[in-house]
Length: 332
Image 1 (cartoon, rainbow, N blue to C red):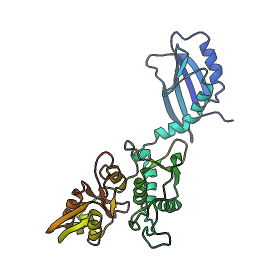
Image 2 (image 1 turned 180 degrees about the horizontal axis):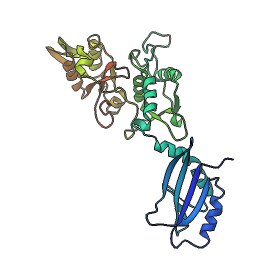
Image 3 (image 1 turned 120 degrees about the vertical axis):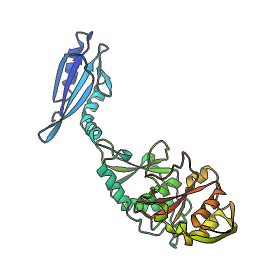
Image 4 (image 1 turned 135 degrees about the vertical axis):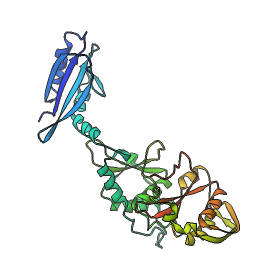
């Protein structure tokens, strides 16, 4: 077995027992390290890891402190002599962990290259109608996710073996939206979220987990790069609008042809707040007004608000929710 590319230097604190260095030297000699050196501690010595390029490879210089309590202190862990198996595993994983930590990472803990790869894959349209007549009716959430998973090259992992309930049909047309927005939207309806991640020494993956407001998940749409007026000019055209005797759901459906963009309801938040658009009556006196203003006034009657977002292709849609910690504004 080839030695690990790790050169370990152990600095002994004053007061270390006479037998401890020999005990640790024997133990560390069984760890397949490149080299092990014992010496006395110097002023300023602290546990530290350094990566060094040697030829075409990389070596790792690790400074550890042997304390008078007979503990080996490493940059992020400490071990006793009885922790042999845990220590061996630490050394085996150290090169991959060090390389992972050394890479410059941004959103979702991904490198720029990884983020671009995921974004490009998520920019593809889903390619099928979610409301097209079928013998079994419109697509369910689980069917949409399954079809999208088949089209992706990045592996999808259902953490805790989470699966979507078949549930009710989606009853909203998503065909013209991109894969990332649709996948995030459908998962959110079920209280789930999508977390792109690349763990040390593992391939890039898309992890489906329970929604956690403290973690950054792939968003249901993005903030437009241009103004809302430029993204969806039809929202800013003056129209004669009157709504009377309609539920909010019916009013939104009636205005859909003029909107010309999808309206996605944040069903997860609506369920948490017990808001049912089909049961809330809304009205709007006849008035010449902007379509955006009319939509906003109707939604306010259900204590909701709208936000113009775009998918990964830059295609606009309206996101309807009650904003707060459970439904933050669009991501830039």
